[in-house]
Amino acid sequence: MAPSPTTDRFPTGTPHPAGPDRTRERRRLHTKLKLATQLGQGIDGYVIGGMGMAMGAVTADLRLSTLMEGLVGASALIGIFVGGPVFGRLADRFGRRPVFLADMLMFLVGSVLQFFVVDGLQLFCVRLLMGVAIGCEYAIGAPLLSEYAPRRGRGRLLASLEISWYAGYAVAAVVGAAFAHVDGGWRWSLSSSAVIAVICTALRGGIPESARWLLSRGRRGEAQALIEKYGVEVDVAAELDERAGTHREGFRALFSRRHVRSTVFASFFWAALVLPYFAIGTFWTQVFDALNMGGNAVAALLLYSLTAVAGVTAGCLLVDRIGRRKLLIPPFWITAGCLALVAVRPTSTPVVVGGFLFFIFLNSASSALTAVYPLEVFPTSLRATGVGFATAMSRVGAAIGTFLLPMGLHRFGVEFVLLVGAGVLAAGALVSQFLAPETASMDLAQAARTARGERSAGTTPHPADDRPRTG
Image (cartoon, rainbow, N blue to C red; front, side):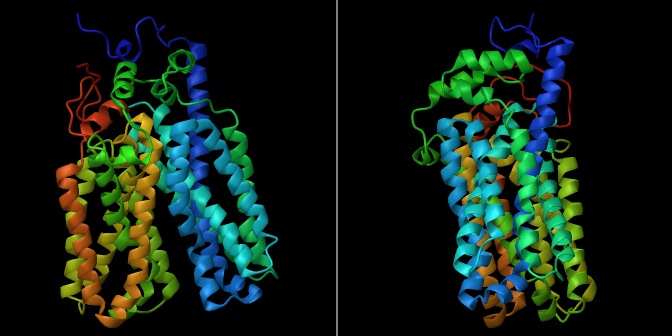
């Protein structure tokens, strides 16, 4: 008789995680971890969105030069580039829990310090620290949540982090508007992120270490205790096989023959998604003006934001229903076609408006996968390092697009810029066609094997089939 799907998840001799007490412990942990991670993503959006609202007042009060204004605006992006890889590596080496706590303490310190800055250089340094914290959050928050998440519904749970980011960004805009007419109000609006950081720090204090990470470090006894206490759904045999097959750690391992496929895919698809999105989003009104579609800038930005929220929400609802590949590859091709169509028909109002809105919606829907795929294609021993590196590469893509778009508009025109964006999306589709695995409903260790192109033993149900099966 084949073993049951439930007992396959635990090593021989592990008591079945049943009973009301254990169920309550598991639910309490999942609820606390979800809140702590959702708030972490929300504070990321809050910090970035808050500066967008406050920049005008900051520039006037601190008398920023054009150079310093640009540096302050870019400081968080620079910090993300550093924080993601560095703290991802630390989380893989020293554990998820200490980095999970240290990250929020950085947010708390940075939030408070913003209130007391007296010049642009000080603000740049503080915002750089907060950018490091944002990069750290990408590298540790979602990975830890994924390592405690059940395989069924894991994609939807992780994708919902993107909604939290947008919510944080929107709340920052409301708070910024409320303080806009207060003398020195930008100090209060920027430092108000300390409130979120305090709440989140309190939640994170009771989060245990990841059982999967403990297994990856050979600490089986400690992992066993957590598995028994919380009924953690984990393929222990697969995790131990991953540990046995790991010969290198750190950044060098990302480019080893064993893992380079996952590294290239996670970095490239993420960068290809965000490069045109951030570039067009940052200069949304300028693009519309170049297409003679200018008008109410606030209304245009509001329409952009609402469409993006609708898209990422749709992606969150579909990621487990239709699978990862269907949410990524067809939208890549369709959004490339949307931008190309606008480029060749720039005088048609229905084409321009419809093409842009469809691009924003589908691109945002696929962006839900940026909180899912990078966590599933790397093994536990490299998960935080890989996610941190992919985060940095995605921000390089966003920075390149944002930096080059205004020059492209000025020198070559909007049609050329849109065709380049379409080309980037098409390149993302091609890479994803060959490298994107289908990882829905798999255990994380099995998903990492599949991403490497290896045969994965164990449970591999079709994403549309919720019935548990065993290999």
